[in-house]
Length: 390
Ligand SMILES: [Zn+2]
Ligand SMILES: [Zn+2]
Image 1 (cartoon, rainbow, N blue to C red):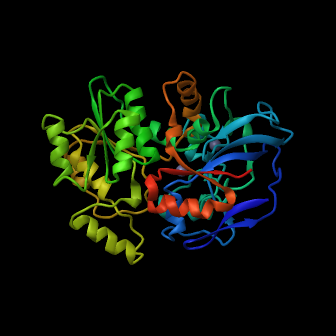
Image 2 (cartoon, rainbow, N blue to C red; image 1 turned 90 degrees about the vertical axis):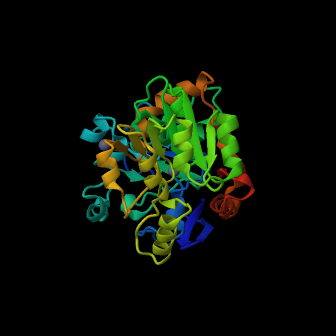
C-alpha cells in the first residue's frame, strides 16, 4: 500500500510499504477514507522530539471503513464506517475503566521510554514516536486498529466523513479542555490558540454553558473563523500592547474564569520571554516554548481554572508562584476520546456541532508532503490539510 513516511527531520515522503495485518484477535483493519494533519506532528517532523525512525508511517487523526476483523471483535462489523480516537485504549485496565483512556496501561509496548520524562507511561498513539508505542499511522491506504470494540465508533448516517474525521482528535481534545473548566452559567472562558483544537475548545465552551468566549491568536484568518464559525470574541496578540490588559478590560478587571491553553510547545509570542524560548529551542536545549501557558496563568482570575490541552515535554520559567498564590486549579491531559465520542456524535447529529469547517484544504495521499508544508507554514489560511488516501 501507499503511505506517508517520516524519512528524517523535515523529510516526508510517500512510499510503498507492507499492508497492515491482523496481529491480535481484537484488531480490525480500516481502509482509510480521510486523515488529517495535527500540530503535534510538527514536533517530530521538525526534530524537536526524539524516537522517530526512518520509514515510520505517520498520522493519528482518521476515519475509515472496516475491511477485515479479528475473530474476537464483536460489536464492529466489516463494512462499518467508523471514527477512531488517536490514543489507543484497551478498555479493561484501571485507567480505561475510569474513562482516562489516554492513560491506558496496556497499549504502549515501549512505555519504558517515557518513564524518565513522565514518571510513568501513557497509552499508545497511531503514527507518532516510538516512545508513544511506535504504531503505524493513518496517512496510508490502510491502518490496523487494535481493541476495535472499544476504539471504533460507528458514524451515523447523515454525518459526513469530514464531520466524523475531526472527532478523532481535534474535537475531543478541545471539548475535554472546556469540560475541565467546570463552566458555570455567566462565565467567561479565554482560549489561547485558534487552530483546530482551539476553535473546538471555544465551540465546546459555548456548548457547556459559557456566556462569553475569547479566542487569542495572531493569524487573521483563524481569528475570523473564531468570530464567524464559533461566535467568539477575539484578540490578535500581535496587535495589542498587552493581552493581559485587554482580557482584564473585557472582564471588568477580574480576568477570565477559566483559561485554556490550546497551543502548547509551538507557542510564538512577543517580548523577552518569547525571545528566550526561541533561542533555547533553536539550540535544541529540549525545553518547550511556553509563552501561551505563562500568559494563561497570569491572565486567569484568582481561584479560576487553567486547562492545558496544548502538548508539552519540558518547560522552564514556569510561574508556579502565580498558580499557588492565585489559587488556580490546573487540569490537563491528552484527550480521552473514547469518553467523549458518543456525546460528540450526538451533538453533530443534532446539528449543534459541525467541525467540517476545519478542513480548509484537501489533498490526495501522493500530495500529502505538500499538505504538511502548507499546514506547517499556515499558508493560504490553512487550518487543517485533509488527505484522501483511497
Ligand atoms: Zn492530533
Ligand atoms: Zn486500558
